Length: 58
Image (cartoon, rainbow, N blue to C red; front, side):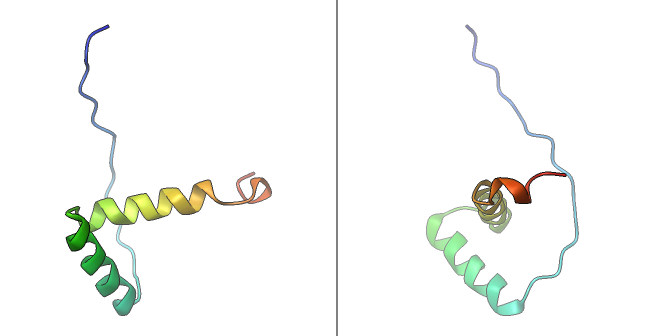
């Protein structure tokens, strides 16, 4: 098996977030050495994975 570099497909979206939440997330991202965008993606993925099954149905 060969190693293949993968790049996930990304799209740009504009969202509004509370100023204090963004400030807290910027501090955490800086402490962890990751981008704010990366932290937001991880938080969203965590929240989506924690939803009850009935919330994820169409």
